[in-house]
Length: 291
Image (tube, rainbow, N blue to C red; front, side, top):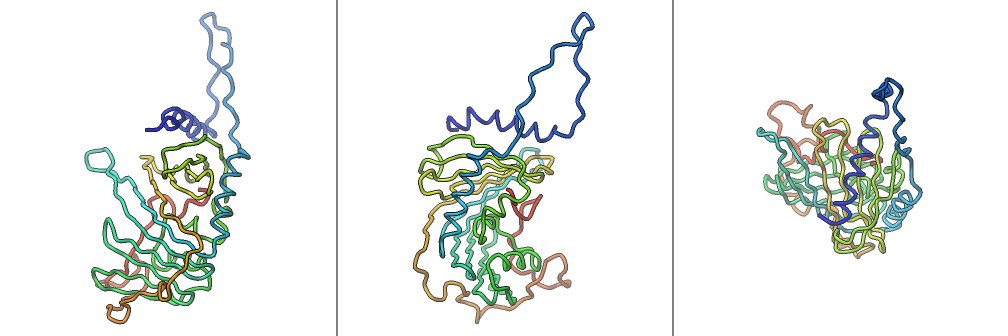
């Protein structure tokens, strides 16, 4: 636990409590021992969109949006309740390659079933290498539209979606109600990062952004409609902006020999039909969306 985490975690708890209690009717004024009204407690500071916090988010978004191509690794850890009460933690790793405006590859070797997702500007494909199953579908003309189509048609979701769309800040700022600058950390991502917390009515998030290179290094989200307040963490590393990308990167190499299956949502597929490779969203939301 770093100094910043240790000293500022109570502040985050206070702000979360303020969000939760914002719509709660005020309690009756406390009375003193002689029956008169006791002095009022100091009012809690108003929650707001702090300019410095927004500047950090805008700088990170601008850096990502300006890159015509990029590669990075996302390691996602998410909590899930156990039968004994305390949560278990599951982890996945995804190696991401994209080329704007219409190329994307996500290789997820584990934990869990290995999956691969490809988009070459015309077709999106979900491939399960262990089972040698391949689902394909005609895709829209942009990464943004294809990610939306993949979720709508097959429940395929990536927790880093808000970082790879054409305008990351637009996605992050949608519905944002709270944003505040926490401070700096030297313990995340092997560099100095600026820490920002931000929230909308659905989710409370904290992000660590490189102070010099403006690249996101870590993101934590808690969905406010989750009674258990389970945490979803994403560590981001191995950033390379505008690399040379080899031909064939955005098409599955084993497409010809794979067994073809339907590209469809698992909840509406006919009985006895093998499901396509799934990358499901965490419980609570399909996107951080401000977060």
